[in-house]
Length: 243
Image (cartoon, rainbow, N blue to C red):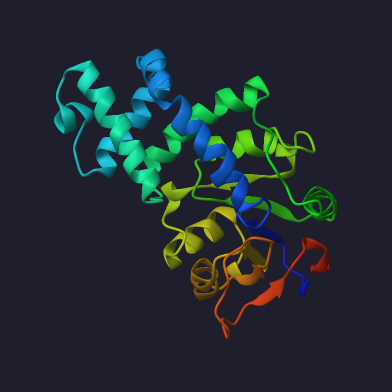
């Protein structure tokens, strides 16, 4: 695959990192630590904001309207909602914010080190060195993205990225999300390459005018034939050309 644009937008799960790392390591840590974290950090401003966002995600105007003024009931409601959303693999903004706060403790303590495919670090450095604008678009919160790339198995790679987007910009299967991201890049959409393992996300990016590449990483879900996106098994297959 050849690319001669100016910006590269990357998904995380199934693109730069194994889906299994998220589901087998990161999500279980949230389930394990959730109750104790909420009890310990309940009065923390960031936690309160995440919980208020969960109330808005549940179509309530506030946490108090959602579950009353009693602190214990609020915590129990939030805990139950987190587990419900995780069981349904729902990409809700408040959930992702709260998960990110729990993951922060894991990354900062050293318990978590983000998995990356072996080709990823060198390619990211090469692309950045060649002058490409690298950014991330993931359903995980921007905060979680910062933690992830700041604490990888290959060290701190966060400085390689100049932008991060999560579901606050819009759903990953909506064309408007990629239109907004292109505006923020300050590039024509056709100068941006989006790499993901999800065909529906790539369809939306393509409809917004971006170039696309489908990542076929080990353990990724099977993709339908005739999807219309260039396939790659490794970032090494991407041949970049400076304009």
